[in-house]
Image 1 (spheres, rainbow, N blue to C red):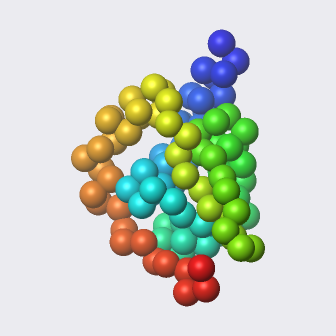
Image 2: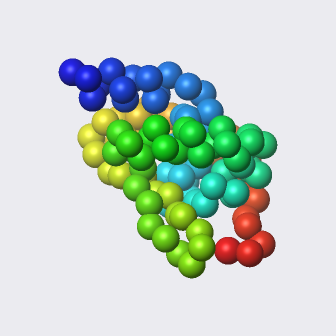
Length: 100
């Protein structure tokens, strides 16, 4: 039951939902791309991503000095993505890292 409570907390924040939607749309993103695209601070985005990683919503891999985030697929995430599918198209265009 604790896992469900933690997922509910993650899904209760609009910025975290936008981050999940962006990662879903783009497949993989680094922190700076999320920050620049959503106009959010790096500490805030990193804190959101840590919560999501700790609860198996996102997974990471390293590419050079960059940590790249992708969604950890499971039934709960799939359900959320189906719910927000129409809104994904309204998200801003990704602002890519020039150095990645």
